[in-house]
Length: 249
Ligand code: PGA
Image (cartoon, rainbow, N blue to C red; front, side, top):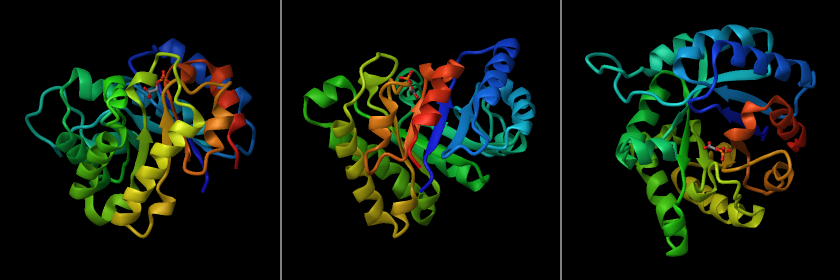
């Protein structure tokens, strides 16, 4: 399966900075990248980035959140069909920052994934344990509960999602799960997907959490790590390009 390297810009960027970053990425991308590439950008910049990447066929567009509702009186929300209209192929749902700062529950995340799928946008469903949960030996239980909600709500469509395992303690901290630690959790998620669909082998399970140019190759070499969701390092073109280059076929 082709691996996916997705940048999560979070709440960073400006019209000028986005253009400079994408121009640098475009200049450094190999003509035939071995992996699929995406950038998940803040909603106001979707139109700008959609236009800028029109000349970069290897790069797909993604958003960082979506409403679970199709339309209506939901002030501040953005629907999946709106994302679709601006060329989004992906949308991140249930990122730990949304779960933590915006009170998103497993059920809400599952509904957002459903709304995305209904509009033809691939949800990148984030799961991951906190440091306290890991230290309490609850990692498996937590990620399985988070994924179970999405499986329950999305039934046979589950093979259409992308999963991102992002240990909360590794996000933005410079601490990365070791390749072996990450693989253990990815294998658990794969097994859970296998119980839900006979297409589990083609569901991409990304790793996220301080992935960078130095550690990408060893993480991406693991059997069940099908790509990366990259925060900080996706904002620096040389780093992002190095991760792309380090991605095994
Ligand atoms: P990070 O973020 O690479 O900066 O740790 C990853 C993410 O939150 O998606």
